[in-house]
Image: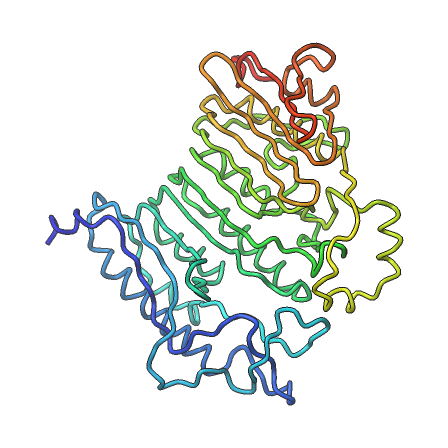
Length: 421
């Protein structure tokens, strides 16, 4: 049996729950006061999830650590009709796009019950790679596991080297406390990941407003972005970091002061080879936009009614963008100083797929490196950026590769340099 275990490389564990509760497909009935998120159906789902996790980890606990296993976790609804297809005191009513709707039902996410995991969830040293992935090609196949529960599972996998976490699950913007709570749980999760981790892939939900013509959301009400701090600390041990649709300050790797001066201290990334930021939202965690409307369009939308704008599917971004140039300077300055301390770095990309459409790419070759940026709105680095990346702003280092596409590049003699600032 022990020999056969070494043949197994991947385990996909679909936990069957009594009823798959889909997001934003039901509304509370006319008697709002009767509905409770602690209803019998959600409790039954949690109990089924908890029992399945206890059984799985109890079985895997006996496996030798040399049996390195990749584990995929997620929920599936039972096909049996022992349970109702809906929660009590709700009715079928799509609420994903209903402006001002107060009857929408909060999404279900699986949790452990009554802290029973402290007694019965075993530690499993054989798990090498852990995945919580949503299945885009399979309708409504979100893994539906709460972020705090993911944290508990990770705590019981002390030797993981890779983690794939997909939280690209849209939440109504008027559920701001839920969004803030999910980010706080993610921050706590990042703070407990074992230092054995070398690969982290994270896909988020953009956590944005109903429409991009509306104010963005402040997801850090305390003003302290602990998620950014914990992610920076985690990145020091990584070989590969890929973030998708993640709301972060532009100076999250190398912190900058108000004058964009670095305070990098002893930060160093000895293993990092691949660094990717894809589909970055055009706002900061504080709710500040990194691109904005023209004054003419801003005056137009300020006279609008928000509910009308939300409900009108045709009314999106009707005006042109104005780049907050200082924020993009801070992005390049921070990445410049940070990548100087990444001796193994091979590839770095930052891509913002919004109305400004900004992209930054660092390619390392055998004898030289190329820093390239592309922007729909014209962008020109300043002297602080040139200092961070060690090129001559007024010389021949910078060239325009395509004026029509807004592509510019800089040839760097060697990156990272032998002696970082």
